[in-house]
Amino acid sequence: MLPPPPSHQGGDAPIRLTDNDAALAKLSAARLGYLSDPFIKHFVPRASFQPSRPPLINIGTFVRTVTIDDLVEQWIKLSNKEGKRCQIVSLGAGSDTRFWRLATGPQNDGLSTYIEVDFPENTMKKAMAIKKSKDLSVILGSPIDVKLGGTALSSPRYQLFPADLRQDPNISLKSLTTAPPPLNPSLPTLLICECVLVYMQPEESNCLLQWFQSYFASTGVLGTIVYEMFGLGDSFGRVMVSNLKVGETFEVLISARSPDELPRSSSKARNVSLPGADPFPSYQSLPSRFLNLGYTTARALTLKEIRRSYVEPEELDRISKLEMLDEIEELDLVLEHYAITWGLSLTSSSMGTWSEWGLVKREWNAQDD
Image (cartoon, rainbow, N blue to C red; front, side, top):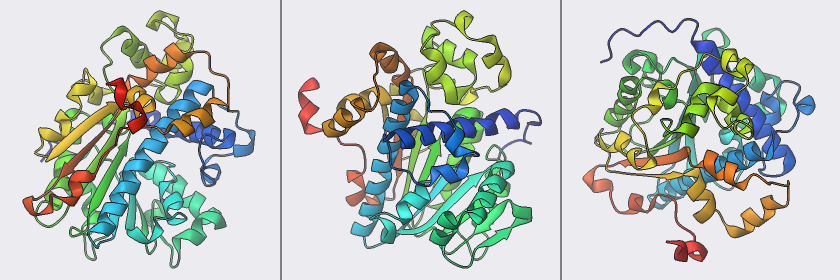
């Protein structure tokens, strides 16, 4: 159990606001044709008036999104191979639209439940957007029940819960396990953590992951995907830390080469710290997050390596025609400070099929090794 949570008053708002940056980046990438996401516009106020983001942001958003989509789709297919439907839990989900994209895609039948958890302020905004949009609410089915003063929402397959993930999960996540439990311990379950653990103290994120691991230890299969920045101790990483406007890191780093070159208004605009990045000075250290907690297996790749060796060449060729990109070196420098790590926690009887889960290097690029 964690010690009494520290006082976070005054520190939550900057973290919550990083979701706005992510939503604007996703909107820009979808509008310009990098991604297909007809739902993100419903979560961005005055979406049609929002300017497009620079190419570095659009490409980074593309690589991040298609990679996590690949891992999620694999998870659903492997669950089907085991004769089961799966459940997905997105921690710090913000304005993410993955549920709606899955529910209207070819993997729809393989999904049992999709659960999202975030700060109450963020879940209230999302619940309001869902109720306001027929495009979103019709996909949820009926009945749709808004609860807890508008901060929670439940439907047959989609659940939205408010929680501060930094607090003791036995308390903050209790609603996921109360009867009837929205979280089924017997189903293959995938956790998605996109830029959320990095804002937490290491002991807080470890406690959170251990809670889920314990919940599924006896009967379930648990997979976890983490996307975040790492290696912030080098000169380029220090620029990212000084910026403290994480969602706009790609944009600012186009012109900034040192913390002294960063716009002072940016560093003062957000008081965001990244304590969760401290234990991970390199991408090779990232799997230790899972292995030290007793996960069966774990692996990490930088976005730079994923773009180079794991994205289909046809897709790279397609997006290269969308916008002119001159800053290839800058793009590589940014992408090598972001990584996707995936880990599996299995019982001995669950091996076999699940060992297939993970990113697969494209054959056309095998000679690069």
